[in-house]
Length: 129
Image (cartoon, rainbow, N blue to C red; front, side, top):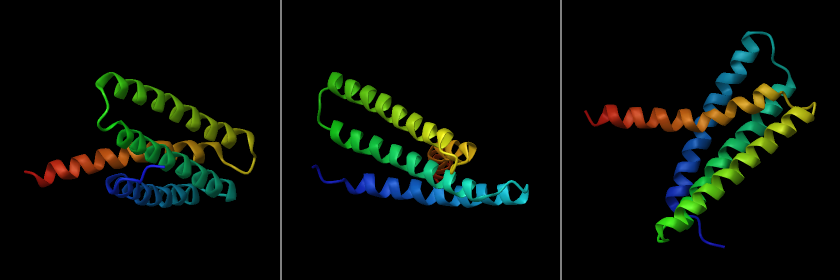
């Protein structure tokens, strides 16, 4: 097993922290609108696990692709994306089939990494001015 690059660890931790912050906000919204129950918490935890795991696997794929030929990198990334989307689909399916999970609370965290990356890019862009 290849050692995990420090950059992959750092970026995954960033995504995890951001996902926890957004999860607290999401839980608060559910509470404020009177729709919170334990299935929301369980769904949120499952969704964050899937989203952060997806990001980590992407980082590991990028790490593994370094130093390979262009065509091999392209094939690795396509395969990785397909498998990671299947994993997210499986997580969502579990959220749908198992009554202990609120499906919406499972799926919403899937967008947290994208929001975190976008916000970081905006913050870095603003700091460079």
